[in-house]
Length: 382
Image 1 (cartoon, rainbow, N blue to C red):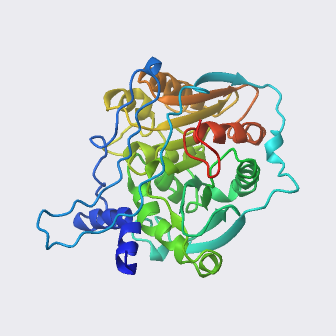
Image 2 (cartoon, rainbow, N blue to C red):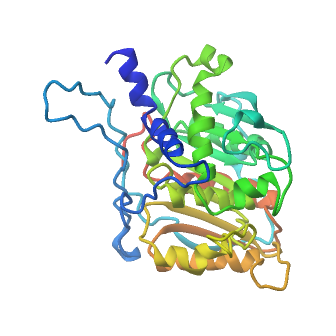
Image 3 (cartoon, rainbow, N blue to C red):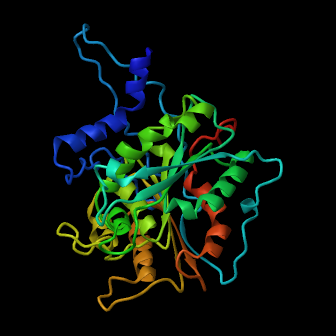
């Protein structure tokens, strides 16, 4: 395959998103993916089939039309089964998981830091003025240049770099986790309704997914410092190899990414997810509360797996009943179970909002559950 074809094949998903953004105005959403998603069977029937929905190039019947090599097929993803699914209670005391301490003989992944300027963004140029967005890219030492890397997009990334990279270093070294690249990205400034962060994370739409796909991911392999170490870093286009994570509004954002585009993201990890009426607009007047109120129940089942956690002393405010984090996450758990999703819900006694004690105790086990079924290099499939 020549260089031009290889480049086109690697960035085909991004090109499709750019085209979708150009056809309509900037505020228009990408096409929804319900028709492409493979519905899961009832909960007692095992795992969803999770068939990959990667776009394929179909050759024209006219032999004179050149064909494009779409590259190697995605890795075979095993049926994850139902181990670890369901509702669990932890606490009230907490201790770091042993995997949070990286073994002395474990190679540490490289972390690269860079920034993005708001004026360079078409999707998030700034609701209150210019700002700078910081990013950290973690590449495990075991990653082989030129191979397709599974990855995680972590919202509020700066607050998770230390904990997530420690867990990844340990679990990858132990051969228990794929060679996952971490993309830690901070939001714009502020919090809550009317802020840049609120617009990015709490809005029930595919705008943030489009931002990641068209403005963030293409930058990463092009960074000079990354290219110096990995001249052919490849981020997989296989949705089974793409996860997203966050706490609070970042958790709601993580779910939104997979909900609107399961052909791009299928693994979701949330702590104290803000599944409440935080961002209201004409299309979704009750914001992310609508996920458990009717959207998950009303729409076709999507091939995604979801981790939820909330603290016994989590947030609750207002008199409208739509800003109770404990109730919202319980309702998310209930409707995901009802609809037959792979989900895992932790009720954390005597814990607060995105309680770091909970994160450091549960993160390694949660990552193992999240990536169940995805092949690990050098480890035979069960």
